[in-house]
Image (cartoon, rainbow, N blue to C red; front, side, top):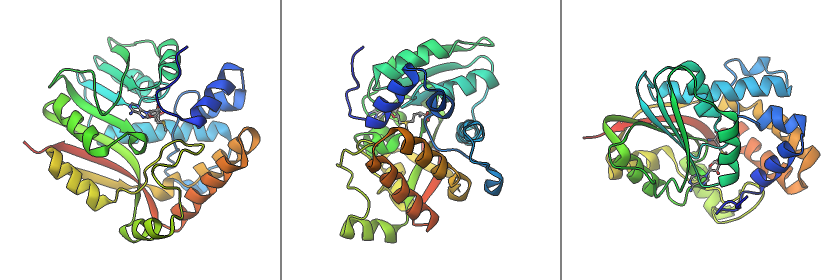
Length: 280
Ligand SMILES: C[S@@+](CC[C@H](N)C(=O)[O-])C[C@H]1O[C@@H](n2cnc3c(N)ncnc32)[C@H](O)[C@@H]1O
């Protein structure tokens, strides 16, 4: 199997664990590889089963915000193991679903796990979300679920999303969005790792604020049509992930997760669902 074209040590670990039959890795991240959404975070019970339900709810929340409807052609950029495509497939009929991922190993699992239902069509395609191998005006909705921070450039991704969307198209994402104040402090103090660092989570850029997103949207022909701050509803993720990685990964992974947890608890780093429509 060819390796990924980018270094994502957390995926190397997950793939190794899932392939070797690790039940915990499978339950937590075998379908979705993102944080969970708990409508009532105080009722989270810390179990992997509860976490799996919450990760499913996060996907549903992002694609509901993007307004998916029957007969849409949907592109899920950075599709992981195909969890969001699987959820759409189980919820809607007559969709044309495309998962795009830079990592052929993840795509191999997605192709194995996700079979079309209810007159849906599904394909998984290898490629870069900033150089999409798709024709102009070929999609109704583009999604990027908790992955845009890995892409080489948010501006290039937005440009590509604009190119492949048809008139009336929508773009739905979720991302870690810092307060401007925190971004400034971070740049000064390097409290979190810099965007170019390559730790357990690979290259991660958490430095795009909400006003940056508005500017990127304007520059690339989109309008920010809705945004929701769900930081509080994602917080029960951290103990589960710290515990899981604490058992199988190195201390750096646990430390990085704990740092992101701390700045999220303090409200300096927010978790947001953002929806965009075409400006023209
Ligand atoms: C945190 S995972 C999220 C996966 C999936 N969206 C989910 O929610 O389960 C980040 C994903 O982004 C993918 N990715 C990173 N850089 C990419 C790029 N330039 N183009 C396409 N996919 C990319 C990774 O391979 C991985 O699948």
